[in-house]
Each structure stands twice: as structure tokens, then as C-alpha cells.
Amino acid sequence: MEEHTEEWQDAYAEVLSELIWALADHVRNGSVTLDTAAAIYSQTSAGGFDPEYAKNYLVNIMAEEMLTELDD
Image 1 (cartoon, helix red, strand yellow):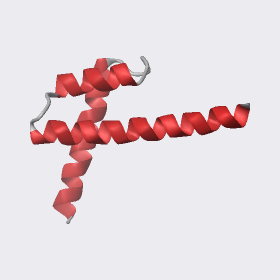
Image 2 (cartoon, one colour):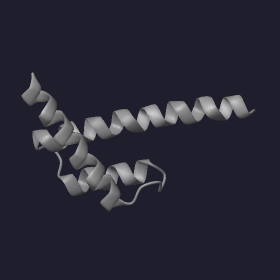
Image 3 (cartoon, helix red, strand yellow):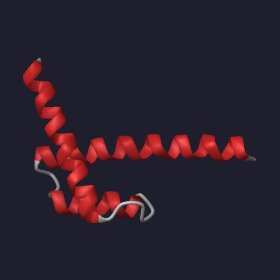
Image 4 (cartoon, rainbow, N blue to C red):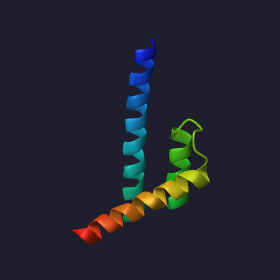
């Protein structure tokens, strides 16, 4: 049973990671506001993150993407 739980947690973490990167792209493209993206992420994370934490997380990811683009 414990193995199954760990597999589920890993899969859930991967989905959340993909979601936050996709939301960051939508914010950068102007198709959604930062506040809306943060609200979506905080709701999807089953209450694991409050909207302010999610907003900071999104900003950090967008900054990381922009720095990566500058290095290319």
C-alpha cells in the first residue's frame, strides 16, 4: 500500500510541476493574469499553497525562463 501511495505522490507532483510551468507560459503570453494563474495553482494544489505563495512561485519560474532565454 505504501508503494502505491509514493507512486501516486510522485505522479501528482509531476502533474503540479507541469501545471505551474504551463501557467507561467500563459502569464508570459498575456493570456491569463498572474493573480488568476496563482489562484488556479493554489486551488489545484489541494490547498497546499496559498495564492501569494503560488504567485511568488510563478514569478520565480518566469524569471528562470527569461534568464535561460538570455543565456541562449
